Image 1 (cartoon, rainbow, N blue to C red):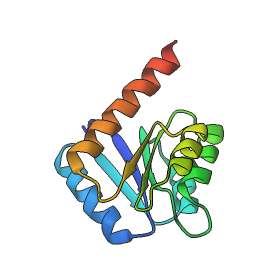
Image 2: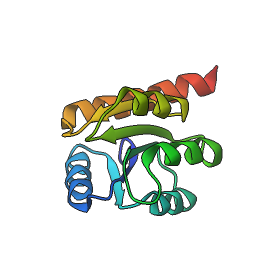
Image 3: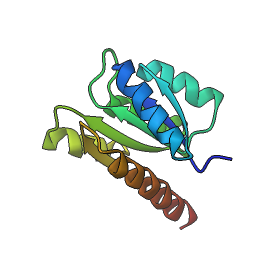
Length: 128
C-alpha cells in the first residue's frame, strides 16, 4: 500500500508524467492531469492527500484551483509550483490555502519533503 496519494496538475504533461513516475518509485501513488478542471474531476472521484499544482495554466491556474479545493475538498493539502515565481503569487497562494510554494525546476527530494510536511501540517490543523 502506498504512503501518500498525490494529484499532480500541470499543463506540461511530460513534467507531470516524469514527477508521477519518480514519486511512484518512492512508494507514493501519483496521478497526473493537465488542467485544473481535470483536477477537480479527479478530486470528485478519488481521495488525494496532496494536490501539487502549477500556478500558471490555461483557463484556471493553481491559485484559483487552491481556492476551489479549499471550499470543496478541504481534506486535500495544496502545494503550488511555478516557473515564474513572484512574491505576490506566493502570498495569493497562501491566502488561497496553499501550504507551500515551490519554484521549478523541482528537486524531487524537496518535493517529497514538502508533500510530507503539507500532510503533517494538515493533520495537525485538523486535529486542533
